[in-house]
Image (cartoon, rainbow, N blue to C red; front, side, top):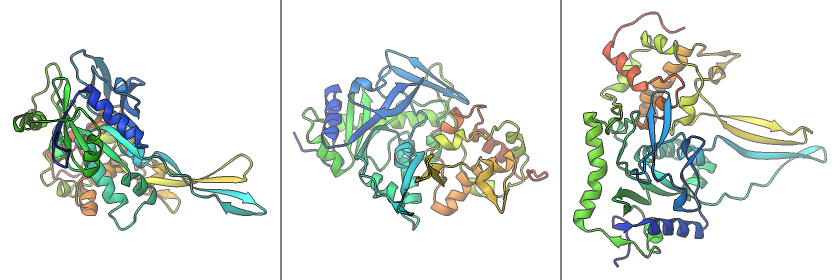
Length: 390
């Protein structure tokens, strides 16, 4: 068999996929991937392919997420759940320093032992794009986050090319899927009960070289594998849903930065604020949101203090507090800040939108607010101005 190398394609059956997991675990990786738990498909530790959600589909829409068992469904025919790579590379709660009172003073504890390297199975194109966005924030903006960098450098990514979209997906509009873009070590395309595996890095080739069943694909088979996400993308562009499912969303991104920047006083901000709960769900499930706060957390004795970094949200009233008062005191102003920053300000800061079209913010919004519909409404009435949001 030809040795695996970057760009080569190899067939994996179920035993081969299990061998990939076994090799990664033998190399000391913590292997995580999609599992059915708590009524959703979430990312948790994997011991074997038996843990994967084979035969399960997720039905998603605005404010709605349900699992449905379908014996015909493949291993990765679900789409995305509430978890993304952000949960592991930039955790929701992280101790960044610890201090203990000793001999009348404070001593900083030694740095914790490094975490084991992480391998994530089942990463979608939208989340690979989100990973690239967070890399710009934490590694490429002139201020390197050491904790993120340590995790990122040892991350092993097994991506999946989607062959199904949920009603909330609009990755095709953002240019972020459904095919897996750059950044994976291995990428899987599920075809007739087995997996066409593309090697994306030298590390991926090294792992696959230790999997005995990795037979090469023929050129015709490679072309067939590449057509799987391409065909889905075309169906998404045409808004042709799978049988019995709502059509995927879409978003017109032409001139979106200027559109939002030119409409800070649009009446739509007040309209959406009448429904928004400011619950922060959209920022919690977003794979690119990176706001955080730092707090000192003491034990009951007061002799030990942990300095912790927690996720923060621009939907929280205190997020914009300056000189004792919040700058954005209304829900309308906070939603406007989120949407305008995500789809416009990020372009100025990082050269790209902060949205990858994963649709999580639509699915996990308790009242089903749809950002694609909100931006479309502003575009449809561009230039209509009333009193600014209060």
